[in-house]
Length: 316
Image 1 (cartoon, rainbow, N blue to C red):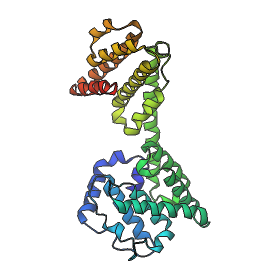
Image 2: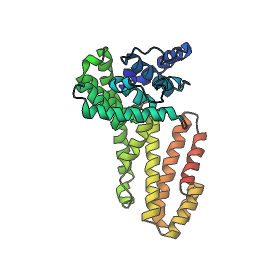
Image 3: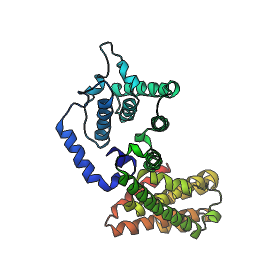
Image 4: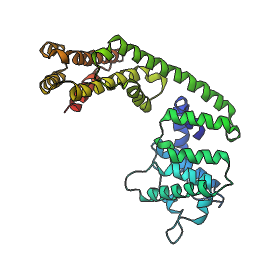
């Protein structure tokens, strides 16, 4: 399950993952009971905690408190277990406000992982790469596609660490397939921007098309959300261009007129705008009309009003 999610193919098995973790949770086993002193139990216990919590299951923190001795310090043997520390480090990032034991665990794991990199010359290249990447960006905070790309490279180089080589082959094929969809979406956005002559009509605006697309890609990358990604990217492009119109182009009076028109988001307001504001307002209307059309196909036209409310709120 850990490898499936890191390799970016977990979305194919959402029901199976949920069912498996529900069974683990229902067992009610104390995740930190059976330490053998060599770290294998620590690794799997911390991994189970992370998988359960990121899936939304409630998990007790009592096990983390057992990692301390009677003096309130983390047990000495923990600092010698690279894989166990790494698993603890990843797990401790999924913390809620006020969970001090997880903050302490994270500080302890971070300090010792850095120390291992500096002083332990005997660690394998595979472990070193895992620690380096985790310290750079923990899995919980990593962009899913970036994590998948890193994991594909890692498991390709360290094939012995992944018992199921068919999974690796499948993940590579899936990554390339999904990436081709993303490329097509970006191409579609570029053609759209050219079709409205964006560079000429908004020469003062920042060229943020790729960034706007990447932002939404960080939220959901799955193929079934293709239409939503393109539409959301267009919204962010509109918002960025609106911001630059207000900050870098329009006079105070022109911006005031544009803001009042945006409050209405009505085509009849177009004739009341200064000429220099009409292109911006027309672009905004066209994008929201497109959203309404696509939402209508799904029977979800109610979402358009919420989207309009958000663009109005942003400009106050």
